[in-house]
Structures are given as C-alpha cells and as structure tokens.
Image (cartoon, rainbow, N blue to C red):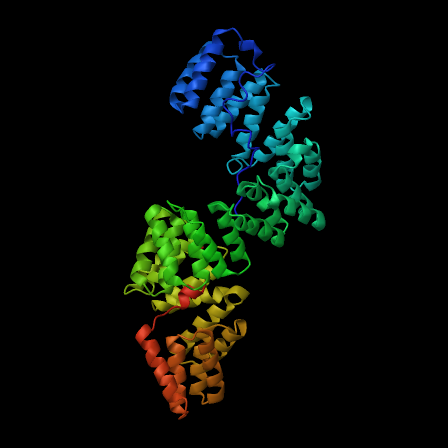
Length: 529
C-alpha cells in the first residue's frame, strides 16, 4: 500500500490562509494599526492566487514590522504553497516565538509537518509536539485532538489514539474521519468485534469519503488486517464512493493477495487522464507477474513517453525486452538506464549480460566488472564475471573467479557448472562429470546444469540417467533449445518411439528462437520492479 497524505477535518483548510489571522486574543496587537490594512491587502492577493505579489507585499511589510506574528504566518503559507518546506517551517516557528499562543500558526505548522513526512524524518514527532502545545492551553481544541489521534495511530500508539478521540465532542467522534481512526486503532489492538462494528458504522455514514478510508490504510496494512482493508476499500466501491487513489489501493491489495487478474482490472479502473507514471508502473508490474510481457511493454512504453528520464521505466523496459528476445531494444533501453544511473549495480549487470550475447561479447565485460566493483561483497558478482570470462574464451581468468566462490552456497551451482564446462572442453570428462553433478546437487532446478549432465550421461551410455536429467530440464524450461535438442538426440540414438514427437517439438522451438548463451543473465536474479 501507499502512504496517504494526512486528512484534516473538512471544515478546515490545508494551511489555512484565512482562519487564523484576526482571531480574538491572537492578533489583537494589529487592530487599528497600519499592519491591519497591509494584512487585508495580502489576504486579498492570496484569495486571488497571486502568490508572488503576496510574497513581495509580505517581504515589504516584514521589513517595516519585523515583530508581527501574523505576517510570518502569512509568509509561511506562501512558502508552503511554493514547496519551500524549510522556509515555511521557519516562518511558522517565528510566528510562534513572537506569539506563543497563536493557534492558527501552530495548526498550520502541524499541517506542514504532516504534509512533508517524506522530506523530514522527524516531522511526525514535531507535528505531535505542536498539537500537544496547543492542547496545553486549549485542551478541547478539536483539530489538535484529532490530529494527535491520527499521529498516535501512525506511530503505533493505538491506546493513545483512542484516548484522544474520546476527548472530542460527541458529534465530532461520530464523523467518518474519527470513526476511521477508531476502527483502525481497535483493529490494531485486536479488539476485532469493536473494530467491525466501527467499520459497519463508518461504511454506512452518509458523509463517508474515500479519504476517510485512505487515512488509516497504512496502519491496517502494518498490522496485517487484510480482511478489514478489503472490506473498507470494497465498501467504497459498492457505494460508488471510490476514487482513482482508492481503486489503486484496492488493486495493490489484490496484487498482494496474488489475485493478479482482479488487480489489473481494478488498477485499469484507476486510470485517469492524464495517467500517472506510478500507476502505469503498477500495471506493468502486475502484467509482468501475470507473464503478459507484451502488455507489460505497452504500459512501460506509455510511462517512458511521459517520463523519458525515469531510470526505473528504462530499466524495467530493458529487462522485459530481454525476456522477449528483443535484444536490440533491450540493449538500447539498458544503455539509457545505465546512462541515467551509472552507479546502479544492476543496470551495469543487466547491460553487461545483454552485450555478452551480442556480436561483440567483450563489450559487456566492463559492465560486469563494474558490478563487481560496486558490489564487492556479493559472491554472485564474481560468479557473473567468471561466466563472462568463460564466454569470451578467457578460461584462466574465468577459473580464478569461479574457484574463489565455488564453496559459497549462493554461487556453488553456477561456479561448478562453468568449471565443469571448462573441464569438458579440456577433455577431462571425469572431472567435468564430477563438477556438473556438484552443480545439480547445489541446485536441483538448474536447467542448464541438467542439460550438461544429460550429455555426459549419454557419453557414458547411461541412457536412463540421461533421459531423467534431460526430461527434468525440459520440465523446468519447456522452450529450452538445448534441452529439447539433446533429448531429441537421445531418443534418436536409442530408437525411442517418442523421437518423432520430440522432433516436431524441437522444430517448433527452433522457429521461435535460435540458441543463445543465457547462463550469465541467470547468475543474478534481476527483479525489474
């Protein structure tokens, strides 16, 4: 699930520019002074959306009235609107220094923190402290109580969240926002019956919105309350209260449950115009998991058009092209990904692997070598480099890299496999047989090693063992050129009645694709998403 922005009571504005300017007891110092007129002018500009003009007016006013808290509050709103988080924080904080009980500035500061949780690791704690500061002199302040409950929920302090809610006026406790926080807090405390009752009331509430549910989803997800998550999200849909964001969350929920068809259908329903790149990536990921590679490329191509400099899109596109044997497109996309993020180890590894399959395989070596430099503690890097050296015929270098990791569990299967192939090329059949058997022992599902084992068993006339190994390889990779070719040879050599059917199967595979060396790309699992 994605974390949702904080939800505020609907009678409150986000970073209000009007509600906290001339409140009794807060800005009385400006009554009947020149500041009042300036504030009214600035307020008018803000209402009109003339933010830059308002900023100029505020800068001028602050130069004349440097101790006027309301001006700093206004400037904080303007800075927040412009996305200048540090400046907005400084302005609201200065307003509170000048007027410690300036509730409007305090609420604005609390909201600012909640809207910038991703930018400031301490923002949630600071927001809570601001609301507690308000409650110290105004214990019944509704928004401070509610936001304290929300923040307590987000920090896993579920009893504190419930306690804050109980201090709200009765009518506020029955609002959907409060019901949602109550429902999630009860669920997190495993008070299941009470949580279900709260959910029932929430979903039936006439003022329910998707934002009410989205507010508490992260807490439900963290506590693995899957059934309640689904109930709330489906409840929105059943009442036609869903939004693109809630549909996306429901689609992601279905994906987590392994319901890929439902996930894709729901995510498609979340598409709006213009479609967002994150949603396209969600759709691409689900299509990829569903093994619809062409559909995956369709989503990624759209995302690439929208954000051509997005590394993740370029990388994902390249990996899918590899799986579709579109090596020219894969090379182009992975080169673009590597150019966007030259120090990304997996971009270097994937590009190196693809180039190793090109007409100039040596061009891939520098990228595999760079992966090893970027991930020096990953034994699979040295395995990949050993495989690369093997492919370009540098057997001495390959042996050095492979022997360095052959005893490590994560590299044993691959290292023994390539060492076994080198032994076979050198005519040492006995050593090759020993090493390939070690490879299969380390990973019984290593199809390439099973093919090699099948060939070696055939040479020793162990036809039953050869058939077992080759059939296992075909079962693991039905479209494997090498596995089907050697199984056909075995059937032909033993005059097996299945030879004709295997010949037809091999001919079918041959039309689809030519034999390629793919072992390098398999040494490290690259998850494109």
